[in-house]
Length: 127
Image (tube, rainbow, N blue to C red; front, top):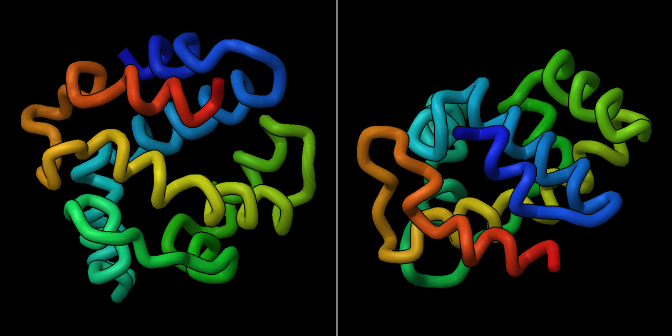
C-alpha cells in the first residue's frame, strides 16, 4: 500500500521524495506510529498540530534527526542522493504538510488505512 503512495507522486524528484516519505511512514507504522514516535521524543505538540485542523507548527532539521534517528536520516539521504543535513531539511520542510494532508479531518487514519485518508490531497503537494 505504501508503494502506491510513492507511485501517486509521479515526476522526477517528487517521485523520489514521495517514495522516501512512504518508506518513512511504513517504517514508523503509518501516520499514527509516526505521531507516537514524535510524542515519545517530546515533540507530540508539534505532531498533533499537523494532525489537527489548525495551523501546522514548524519542525527543525535537528528535531527530525532527533526523532527519526541518524540512521533513518542517513537512509533517506542515500535514497535521495543528497547529504543527511539536506535530507533532514527536506523532511522538516514537507512532513508537517504531508501529515496534515493525510489527516484531513483532524484525526489519525484508522487501521493504518493511509491510502483512503487523503492520498489525493497528498499528490497535489507534489504536482
